Image 1 (cartoon, rainbow, N blue to C red):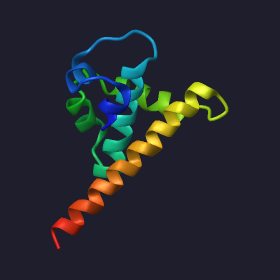
Image 2: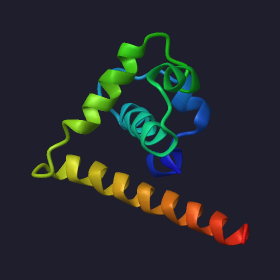
Image 3: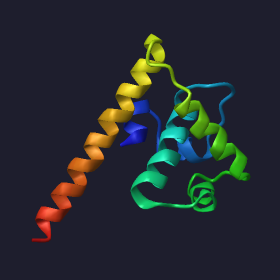
Length: 101
């Protein structure tokens, strides 16, 4: 879901290379936040899943997301994507609950 919103593949997310703040950086930040929120994964687990060498990288990605300013157009677009992704995840979780009944 996150990769779709940022037009990157899972391999690009985990193994790609980018300088500065771009789609991949935002996607990594969002993934790390959602893995913590929805699955309560530790920083160490998120680091392994996202194929990062140091936990500090994950913290930096998270901070990039947490420091978004809704007054800025570009940041507002990223925040909108986050809310859309959360809604999609919630819908999928609810669909799974109904399937198991």
